[in-house]
Length: 457
Image (cartoon, rainbow, N blue to C red):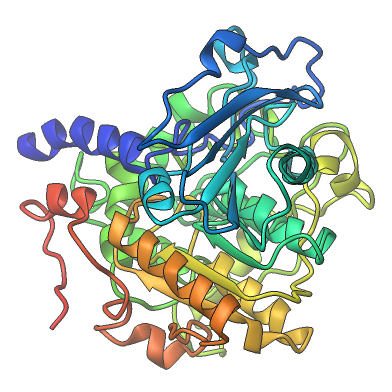
């Protein structure tokens, strides 16, 4: 255990630094309610950047958002618009609006693609503003450089939400989309975060409160762990039956039986130092006052795939605290800026998601696939599972392959292969996710000496 304790700091650092090479990862979603903060600012001295390999750089401010654009000397006529992830709004630094360069910047320039990225004109989980500012930058590029032959949009995490909303809002602007580790289930993510905490409390025999009191992280969470562990101090590595039930319930809330879930559970409940316990719970921020926006009133909690509830499952469903959203709870305050995703797509979309991500869980992809299917557009969606535990922990190989396959699909009508993520039998296969997992994953390699990990054939 001493080795595991030392490793936790290393792993958290890897998670923060390795998430697609973007800043502010992992996102501490719903940590604040300051969506409309009046004091956002841009440090214009940070916008200039050196060109790469003879490219032409542009930077400045457009519609109150900072931007960076780069056009290669051998521009092929295509543009990639990059949507960054979440930014906090806690003073002082989080009031600054900053631009993220795309993680594939060098590859884009080397292969003739121009790219453009916006800071957005607001921070926080403001998807509506992110989508508007990204679209405004796309239009600005057309006047500054020229209208591209093809325009692609890509983003990670909240940027994946921005990407999915953008292609529905402006279907004639973008030719293809690559949302990675995206919040593609919109409000369903907030309900999942609620479940993460309430199921733990129910299994631990704690009378839950919503919103919780100010001692939730310092008093309640340690009690949860103590009541779910088999031996003192061994949560989550040795669980009693109540702890195993919690782990099983979370499995089916986050995407079902699948490879890398066990490792993801250990990672997100231990190595990230309670990043998910209390996320959005402290100070009642999941409520997003005014109006409760989360809901588990009709959720059926299970520990396995058998739809018949066992006595233990029935007990959980009978005793868990039930929260009902206010009728207008998702249309007020901060969540008014979280637009829903309908799944009505008209251009090719290729997604990536790690199997062990319990921050923005794999179930986001399944929800999105169901919505797309309901709109009769499944032929325009390809999804790929990646075997890692981190949030947005993709390798350069995986990102390059996905983008190149998306381009070939858009421009040559060659639909790429993907994983069948809605078939529980296929998802549960021990080799699921092997087809598109490429290269060395630093987070996986860091925990491999301490946690047995399944390997691909």
